[in-house]
Length: 287
View: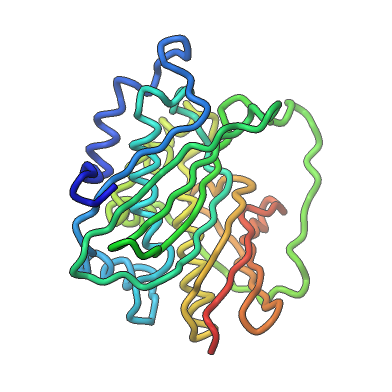
């Protein structure tokens, strides 16, 4: 499918408004589809928006940050969620994992094509849904990735069940991070992501959180900027497992270690709770 044949990728606020009528639908009202996909076109690269993103996270290289492309992938995933073939209720879906890999640097003067697909669920695996995203430009692969979401009401800890404290890996080089509500609101405006669980404590509590929480991909982008600036090399890939939410405001410890010259691991630890919030792997370009 050529870019001219694909519908334009909707803006994120418009997607959220358009999906309100469908987000509480019952399963019997939709056609359950084992796997489907859609294509979208994006008109070039918004260099001004990329520059604002770079400055917000202090990415110090001139190339578009790897995590910036998640903003496009997220819009494509939401468009698929709001498709009537999507068999699940959207409120309460919890972003539980993400992977991004950059294959080539995009040109600013050419359209992008995005294909987003809902993977079929494995037999007996009913607690999660997984999306894949492929971004191309003039037939050239730019980016691939996946996002995993946990369905609401699944894998919740029983009341009164003991919580075992965790420890960050001793080998990680650590740095203190602060998460403030004002910073998360600024990210919401930058990303166009006005999900109320990140902006309203009252609405977040309706979805089972004790208060507003940080965007998971805000955390990953912050980690990516720290890794990239520290290594002086652009990131080619990063993954994330979202273990638990970061309630606002919060103090966290970011840790990073190199496994070899171009690969490593990172984690975001909540010392007040003795719990790991996010961890993942990363890969940079050669020196």
